[in-house]
Amino acid sequence: MKELNNLFIEQTDKTPLVDFNYLSGELILSGKSIPINAPRIFEPLLEWVNDYIKNPRSTTNLRLNLEYFNTASSIWIAKIVKALSGITRPEGVLILHIYFPIEDFDDIDDIKDDLSPVIDVVSSATVSVGLKIYGTDDAGKVLKESMIFI
Image (cartoon, rainbow, N blue to C red; front, top):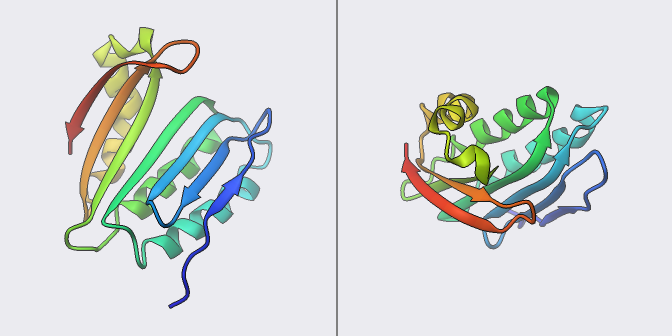
């Protein structure tokens, strides 16, 4: 089996930074995701993830540090999370890192609402899943964090 190459795509005003590192298992989406044509942006990412799960690292970290994303992006992000939750490596762990503005972090009901689609997607995961949420300031500095095991 050939080794999977890393995937790096610079962010734009409407598309997120993508930094998927096969060797480390770090998969990062950050910035804004409001593309006009979401499939053009996200289909290659989902294809990469589908190749990744064939031979994943023992720990996979998906870092969603998106300051804003539209509905089309959320559908594609859910597809990526669903694919990753299908990792079949017996000792595998998937940790979802999700970043929120600190003012949203303290309202647990809002966070539950925001995370319910993600939790629904990973509820039937074949891999152990952890969820780590971060409260950030306007500069993106983490001020508070919490870990949830699903």
